[in-house]
Image (cartoon, rainbow, N blue to C red; front, side, top):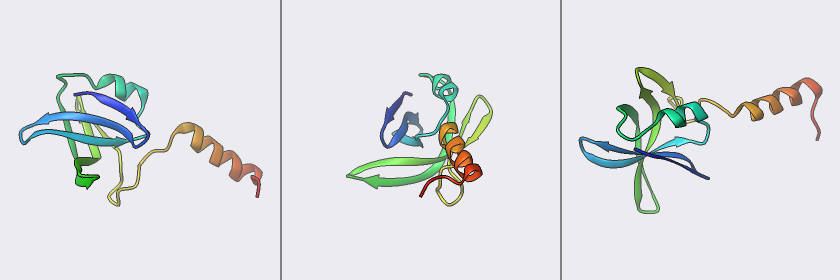
Length: 100
């Protein structure tokens, strides 16, 4: 398996019982998780299959690596985590009123 950083998010290529597929992990997975995903590592991915531009891929909702379950998207398909710098920016905007 391998991860690739693209503007559409991190992608994981997985060899499974039904063949090889690409799982979209979204743009916000941690660097430590990226480093923990290595070739030959056993992972479990759940989500929904989608086709875009003629290519089929799995939109990952939950990823399990080394027994640790990571929620990527909520049940409605929205990303569960935002980057810390974006979270800090929105928090400081709320505290100080922001700009219009």
